[in-house]
Length: 248
Image 1 (cartoon, rainbow, N blue to C red):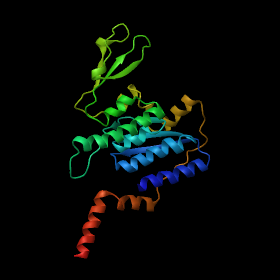
Image 2: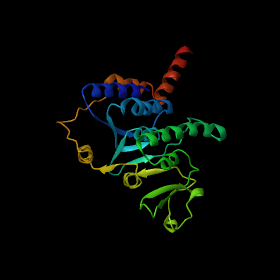
Image 3: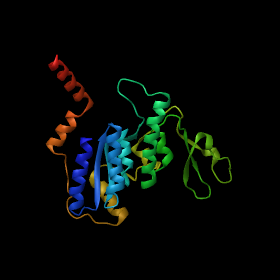
Image 4: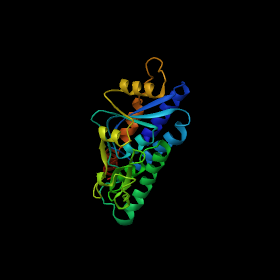
């Protein structure tokens, strides 16, 4: 949650300074669901109407990192990075039955919200959350475009779809995780680049804009780093143990 407040603070500074493009550098294995949802809603509902949001994945965008990435209007991935693997887990116990579906249902809806807002393939995002979703890619012969279908909903009309050439993207016993090149091929990443300068060059060329001077770079403060560290589950667990020892 400390990261959410940090992102909010820095975003408001950028918008207040007249920035029209906001590039969020992402490299994370995930985090708490409520914090990720707060960040995702903030990007979609409050930032997107005032500026163009871009997720720049520098290493990996796993779990909550994938949700935050797709909540940006564009995803640009550095070469040899990954995105996906977003099923919920709990520390020290298993999510099964109704409890798992309760958790996954909420996260699937959050990914669906992002897909609708930013035009990402909804079925692929759902497959990042739930193992039972089998995804195939089939080319529409009329439009020449690829479309995604669940395994039990594959088209059968060979005159409209290339039924024989259907490609399995994700099995029903897998969580979807994509490399940068796969994300680009399947329409999740807008571009794959070697560095942030090339990411900006892609945006400038695609959108016909010119970026004035060096970009403003806003980093977390030392106090935000400290609060994030103190509120991490591992550190909190140690502090609780020390507190109990002190009471004893």
